[in-house]
Image (cartoon, rainbow, N blue to C red):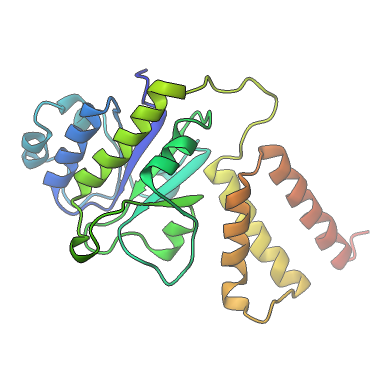
Length: 241
C-alpha cells in the first residue's frame, strides 16, 4: 500500500466524468490512489480516462458504491470540503490546520468528502463529518474546480505526512468508525425521543449534539458505554427491571 493510501478521496454523485479523471490525476501527483465514487452519473468513461493523463490505474481501481455509508466503511476520521458559507455552524479548518488532523493524527483510514459540483453536500452528509475544510480563496471569485480542491487539500496532507506522519497507535482502544457513530446517533435520537428531552429548539437539538460528539472523536468503547447507558435508562422506562 502506498504511503498516502490511508486517505480515501470520496466524490459524492460527481456529474462530469472529466472531473473524475482530473481528480485521479491530482491524486496521482500527491501519491494518493484510494478513490471512491458515490453513485457517479457517468463512469467509467473515456472522458475520465483522457483527463486522468496517465493516472489510469487510479480510475481502474476506483471503488463505485451506491451510498455514502458504503464509502465511509472503516473510516475513523471523516472530513468534508466546502466552498460556501452555511446556515448551520460546523467546525471548520484551513487546509494547513486540517492536515495536522488528517496526517498527524495517526488515523488508519481517513475519508475526504467532496460534494456535487453544483450543490455540494446535503446537511445529512455534512453531519457525517467531524469538521469541514474551507480553502481561503478570493472572496469575489470563490468558485473552485473539484480537482483543484482535491489537489490543495492533498498537497497540505502530503506535506504533513512527509514531516510527521506517526505510525498507527498500537492500543486496545481505537477511534469509533463512521458506521459505529451513525448507529450511535440513531440510538441517541431514539433515546432523546423516549425521555422527551428538549432544549426548546427540538429541530436543532440532535444536530447540535452530533456536532459536539464529532468534536470529541469518540473511541469505540466510549460509544459502547454511552449506548449501554441509553439502553439501561430505556429498560427502566419500559419497566423491564
